[in-house]
Image (cartoon, rainbow, N blue to C red; front, top):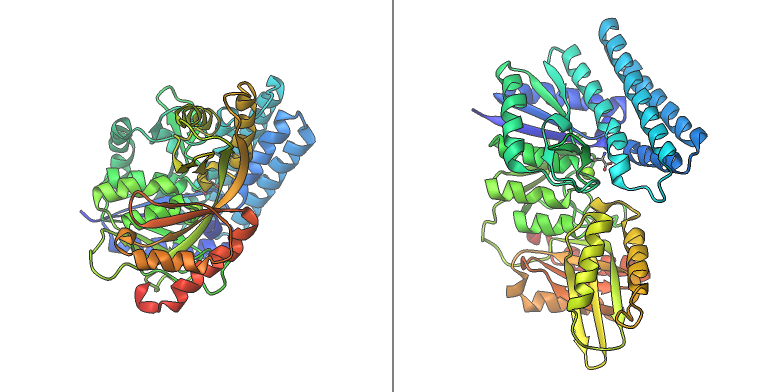
Amino acid sequence: MTTLVMKFGGASLGTSAGLAQVLRICADESKNWERLLIVVSALDGVTDMLLDAAHFARIDHPRGYRRIAANLRTRHLALIDQLPLDRPDRNTLQADIDQLISGLLDDCLAIANKFYEELSPIHSDALVAVGERLSARIIAALLRQNDIRGVAVDGTDLLVTDDVHGNANPDLGPTAQRVNTVLIPILQRKMIPVITGFIGATAAGATTTLGRGGTDYTASVISALLCADELWIWTDVDGMMSADPRRQRNARVIPSLSYSEAADFAYFGAKILHARMIAPLAEAGLPLRVKNIFEPKLVGTLVANETGAGNPAIKAVTSVQGLSLRRPTSGSLAGVTRLVGNTLFKTLGMRSEVLIASQSSNSSFICLVIPTSIGIDGVDRLQRALQTKMAEYPEKMPWAIETVSLVTAIGDSLQRAPLLLSQVLANLEGIELFGIALGASNCSISVALAPEDAREALARVHDLIISSGSDNV
Ligand code: ASP
Ligand code: MG
């Protein structure tokens, strides 16, 4: 039985032109595969607006969150106005949207009444889930209207996660059972599930989210559990690019990446994929394609098992924020790494991964990455939490904490290519490097530097990719 899972991101869903493409692609692929499943994000920018609404609720600012709720309602209603829906379907959809928006206002009120000192994802996860619920219902209705039997499915009925709100992980055993009881019957009836990405629920039923960009992760877990043949991620660029195309004009498409390269690429800041989505695919040996919704004929990027062929080459460069800790003494790092680990987990739901730890006779330096899935305020939140915690032990913890940037060059088998590594470093001549690390998977080298140097460093490593010729990429 052939199975394809397709994920559509917010940028593809936000306009009627994008939706027309979604429809066309679903119509084509529903003929090519015996089982087809769709996983969708919220419309572009909606999750940010929902988080803003939650912040307004926390400071008890009803005008702020009501304005956002009204904007969201208007935006979704305007979108369905442009779609070719018949009256009963349009009315049902309007009623669904109104119900979800009124639930959002209730959630805001509940937050406002609780007077939280700081907003944590425990309070906002259920509220934020509304974005994906809205879009899944719209896509399912659009498919149905065009004789494709789409049915909206809530990720909260499917993904059983741990209770790490804001950065949850699906528990594969119970999730597999839900896939059997919820998804298989839909597929047996020859229908197409349109699943909300990004959201799940704990075994006790509390809504959780999987981290920013988490729809990818939902799609990968579902694909692996269904033993799908392929997962396709549809986006609005031609595939995975050698650098962020918004920052680096001459960035170009990477035809193929190994799972390890793709995992490092995402972990070190490529926003196109969620960092934890690769592991389930790698384990299942399930190929992933990243394709442009507006150019579906282009092959895009294929992520699959390494072929072992070819010479080591740098394929991509990324930049991500991190935190560095420095102290004017050497000695054991066990205390500080434990403190950082605990604070990281409490604040961001992340297990500690110190990327660089180095010492000289009279100083120590450690540096950690904050993946983009944590959201834009993750670095600030962690820095504040660490400063507060360390202030409790001023003598034991004389660490200065600073934000840094980590610029990472990605390419398989770098451990076998010291010449290539030296070229990366030579291209950074004149830029002060605080630390250097070769990734444990052997397909990345990262340098820590001042945030103001990141742009230049990224451009220089990218020059190396461009000048080394197209056969490397
Ligand atoms: N809507 C969520 C976000 O903005 C999840 C996703 O887009 O994948 O992070
Ligand atoms: Mg994304």
